[in-house]
Image: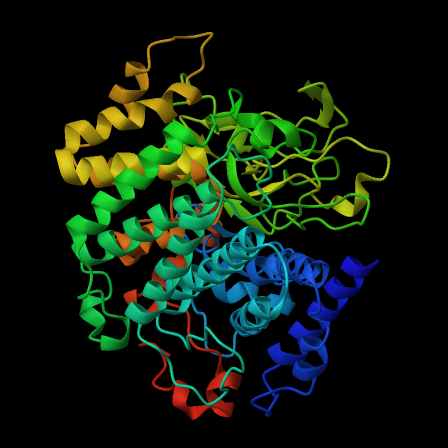
Amino acid sequence: MKKILYTVMISLFGVLVGCSDYLDSEPLSFTSIANFYKDQDDAEAALTGCYGLLQDSYSVNGRTGVFLIADVGTDEIIGNPYSTPDAEANMDQFLFGRVVKSNLTIKNLWAKVYSGLYSINLLLSQIDKIDMPELRKTQMKAEARFLRGWHYYYMGMIYGGVPVFNSIPHDIKQKRNTLEEVMKQAIDDLQFAYDNLPDEKLMNSGRASKWAAGGYLAKLYCYIASCKKYDTGKALNFPLNSFDWVDINDSYVKADALSQNIISKSGLNLTADYRLLFCEGSVNKQKEEMLFSLTSSPQKKNGFALNFYLLPAGSYGGGWGTCRPTQELYSRYDSLYDARANWVVGGLGTEPVTQTIDNQVYYQPSKLKLVNGEAVDGDYCGNKFRLLKTESKHDDVYYGNYPLLRLADIMLLHAEAVGHMNGDAAGREALKVVRSRALIKSRSTDVDKLQTAYRKTDFIEELLDERSRELCFEQQRKFDLVRFNRYQSTIKAISTTRGVWNRNGAIQLVDNVTDAKIWSPVPEEDEIINPNLKPNNPGY
């Protein structure tokens, strides 16, 4: 009962401090909530409450947030002009490459993240006052700091420089910290978590662990190293978001060491059947590979509304088809040898045809219709995540673990770091392990089939293609294109003549995209309340 009470209180507190119109530097609820931190049970319950806010910090309401910011309006996902975008999230602005600073998703994500950060900082401000075993106290601090570092990692990638708070209260008139200060705060927090969480096999991907902290550190080091190496944002001449401070070689060396340690010591393995990572009923198999995930609860009706683009569209698929895959995405796959090709994209779920996967029954989408490799039929949709066949279909909500960080991503980061340090050939060799899992074994056991098919003269292009094949629809693509300084050029290259949804939905996106959109704007409401947040990011 006490844990439930704390979760409710922390959530309520987050709402109070997350609203853009609060004016007190120390909200009224601060003193009353702080008084509840009396013993270890109180601290544990408060930490559980902080975890409970993660879903809002990532997806606002289970369906928008980073889901839209990092995926929609890239060369993986474009709009279906015959469907109605989510007005509550200003989805159309992402689809058409015209996000403005009054965008509701941008505003709501900002508020939710700072709500979560306040709750985390409140816990950290109280924990030393509590009489409890020092080992557990240190581990709790590490968990809380992991969550704080996780929040700043995403804030830095989405907004660039933002206010950094690591104590209570938060000053609502604080100016934006530099991107350097944001990312260094994330690094300090994640490093503390990595150093102080147990060195043991990961059992619960919904909680902070040494390996999740190391994984995000590796991602962060690769992010800043590639941004510096490829001059991300340089042409915008906006010093607040500069990467001039980054040591490229040092960052890649650290990313390499972290990734190797995770691969060899975490106890995680690539789930043998790629499909199971995205099947609602295969939570135990998902645990084999996931370092960190959003966890759901069918009993509490707490899950993820993946309807817009992650589920097969149609009455038996659960998806709405509001957003559709690009032709470019499908064309990246070798459909003869790569098992991911016909799992990730396919046709509608309009017939009650079923298939059994991992001893669970799912509705089976229709077969993709192609002409010379081109998707020509309006059935073409995203099929990556699958709902269990049930009588009620539980309102089309996904109750599997939602992946935020997988071992496959760590292996691809390792290939990136190796490629930088030891050359393209070494980087390509490191890609083999992920491609080996993708290989359709009934056709060939020779991974060189895919090595040859996917070979590009430009290793970074090859790496980006492989990251897209493996991680598409997992909120990675925009961040990847931005950090290699290929955001505008890649979007501009989307075909408007090949592929059914490209022809119908890509023109406005291609016309509107600019490099000024690599960062989201500081929300207009917050900018009005706190003029110290100005200047906004270029282009807004």
